[in-house]
Image (cartoon, rainbow, N blue to C red; front, side):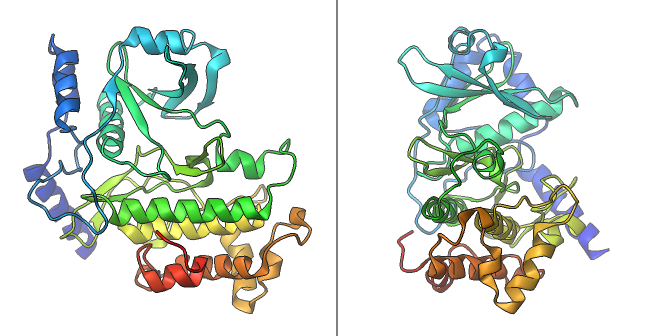
Length: 363
């Protein structure tokens, strides 16, 4: 009952503060839509989806935040159409229930990934997804967060990103054709990079960003295998005065969902921390969050964590070729992050925890 009352209070507050539904549709209906969007880009005032706050100039900056003007731009449809060879199937690099992603090459030679929203549930939902990702990523700038290059609102809804030449962490870990086995040094580098990216989202932005879908397929890898957090379609803003949000419906990926989110829709930084803990176990073990026999990675790993048998967590394909100290640190991190009670999980910004997990590294 208290959760329901809290959710209703959240919704009433959102209705008072946030843009109304259909804002994108009204914007697109104007004859001067491109000029208006270019003004939006220049002023750095990206419209946010319902349930997301527009940046408030009077709010104090979060720890470590440096304000950025958005650097993305509006692409004409002709440019992205040409870049992707007319959205040719040969350029399709990924697809899901919400979008298709095409590889493309711009006129200046840059490789890009063009995300075309394809959700079948109707135009309003597509608008919300588009505004969510655009409004979130438009002001984010960090080496471990996938950079947004721009958008296109002609003909359909598109987002343009820097192309990640090594694909996703999921394909790196789980592709049966992947040769050779992912080395330990690279696994550790990826774990640390994702931690830095999450720390930035939670503490380095004007408004805290809760990703809500941290998983291996949403970690993209650059040419030098630097991990970048991507896909902000489910992201939520969390104002500094709010301890959490309550959302519905529950969205995300089975195997990564924190208990309080899965059962009650409660969202805060600890939602991402839990998913990060699962991701750490996935990186260490090479196992999927849920395997073909429907056994969860957590149910398999917890006995080893409880018994201190961290060596049994290591991917057998490594054949013992790993740094034992680093393995112990990652195992400790995972055990803290996957605690059932959110209040007992660390935050990404707790310096003692960061030191205990990764050693003396600089965030």
